[in-house]
Length: 281
Image (cartoon, rainbow, N blue to C red):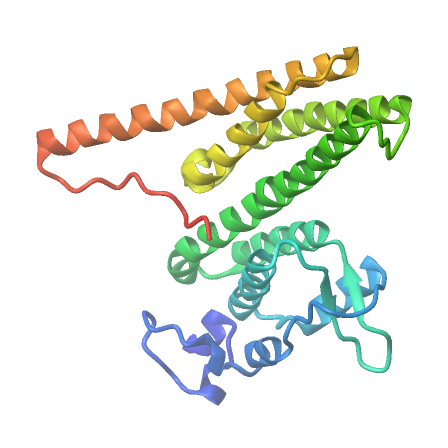
């Protein structure tokens, strides 16, 4: 079997290269994807249109398809707070929910990876893991933390306006907003625990998330837990935030203990440690 048939890539038409160099951008289906730049400033369309556009642009052969999906996921993760827009020829630009888009590509890149020849699975594995971890963390931790931070700042603003007798809303409305934030925290906690329980990557979840991100979560929740506002709703919010903060604190402590254990093992064996985190940038 010729190499191009074995790898499902038209190598005979684009040239042969050394496996470890992997210049996939020379393959025309991949080049088309790379040329189709993501635009983060346009009008809104439907997710169905987006999926149709995205899948039609991907190469059918599994290896270049994986590379292309990884490229798109990297682009999405690099801009977690901006609307994702793709141009559609002869129609209005397409805007989709960035979390939904990330989940769509995460699922499809895994499917295409499973179709790749074993040799290429070995080559692509580290890149796949790194991209999937960063994409999962971006939509689960970075975006959600930003949303909770904005909601908390709004609660403080409204509470301060009532305290200064220049209310922006009624006390009853503020109480409802506080209750909503408490329910959001409870929901996020359930989702976050489920993510950890079902984590399938070889990179440990807290190593992938990183100390900086975990600390940001703990710091915000600890501030909410110390909020001085006298109401039953505020008390429930403080309790929810305090429990969640304690959960993140324990995970940070476990990371510290794991690092200390590895340092001790390195000192004993003379080997270099490997306990690292994915970049928080």
